[in-house]
Length: 328
Image (cartoon, rainbow, N blue to C red):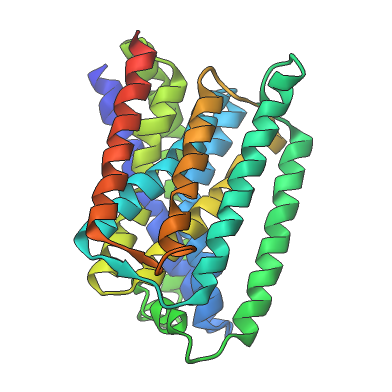
């Protein structure tokens, strides 16, 4: 079991380093092509921070271990709101300034609702709960619409909007020098992601077998927590720099990407079976997203330190209860 733990840790570390290198290299390439920092930040950086989840899911689906693929997406979405956003609010209470984020929160609620309905559809018909290939195509089409709308907004957005400065200050986008080094970053990033994904899946399955728990639990908590480290670090740094829109945008954007690209990619490879307890996990994910409404939509667009502690406590209760049910 020790070898499985060490292997899983090494795999997740490779995923994080690979994702970071890919973001930096791709950002420099885009800058060299004259793409604006705003578009780079909301597309390439968003992809890069979610690339560990994407690679893990591809390997999981190819290996037939869809439990880890499902757990990784749903677990990452829950972790991003409960742990990442909660921790960022504890570090520095957030007061939103950009109206763009207020629109994306309802969108995330819609996306999470669609995923939950897709999972429930089979159960309501007396069949196994799965995310099928056709449903994967539907989710990807939704991402295309989301990408198009946001790209149009990015083109028209005023320079006075604070989110411009937030994205421009993103550490991933700094020091974009035009050199051959950027291609080395891209190549090394893809290589490390490939190795990390294969190592993570192989050792994740071994660890689940050794502990006597399902691969879903490993995906929900171990792999999901590891692949959410880039979001955690970015959001905490953004909160410390008093950039709340960037902190929340990082979480919301990552969750949308997980739901509309990462999970559908797995479904296109093979139908993703919703494991036992998976529907409950989806409902918990939906509940965490709905919790954002009173803070950012109906309220004063502020997430206090007390609210951050509340999110952390809820996340802790979910983790303990979910693992407890697995061990019973």
